[in-house]
Image (cartoon, rainbow, N blue to C red; front, side, top):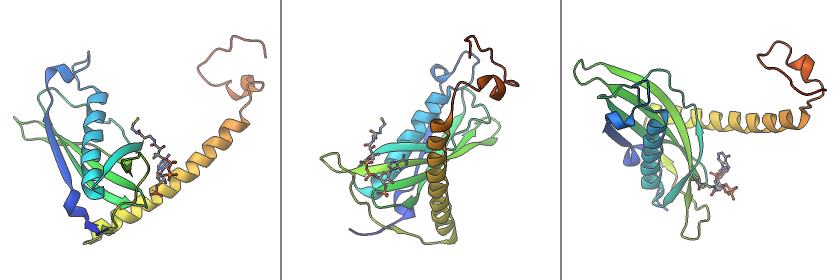
Length: 183
Ligand SMILES: CC(C)(COP(=O)(O)OP(=O)(O)OC[C@H]1O[C@@H](n2cnc3c(N)ncnc32)[C@H](O)[C@@H]1OP(=O)(O)O)[C@@H](O)C(=O)NCCC(=O)NCCS
């Protein structure tokens, strides 16, 4: 299987934000942007893998700046990292006001995708050729993110298994909730 360079699968999708994408407050629904992120992640991952890919997990999606109707949203995606069958895709989302030319960086996030064969089994993906410092930095960053996620997953499993409702009165005394059962 031939290795492929980051630039070989880099993909940008640009879409006009039309009124039917808006919520009741007149801003673009987060779900519309998530769907676009999923599409660009799929396009990038499948170009690199040469195979059908599925979304496994999504990290660091934050909607810190609203996107307005009439803006042009561009999603730039690259393969940041490949494991054996998985690929981490980095996506940068920008929204442009066409009248003023102002460009907002609305967020950057990571999608983990897995390549599948015709029997729906994970299949090996080509190695990634790193051609510049940016490619190398992103690959190392993705490795770190993968390690952190693994730790968080383990810690969350531990947390779940140690939670008990019996001491809730003490644990939740400063929280904005009302306990309606006798403990
Ligand atoms: C993701 C999936 C393929 C993992 O299957 P599995 O039998 O656990 O396979 P493996 O253990 O061999 O893992 C395959 C790869 O997924 C990665 N993976 C598994 N769970 C993961 C998670 N929670 N987060 C990130 N990566 C994960 C593994 O690290 C492995 O990557 P690698 O080969 O690069 O090391 C399987 O759970 C799946 O098909 N899920 C449904 C995905 C889907 O349909 N998405 C569409 C939206 S519904």
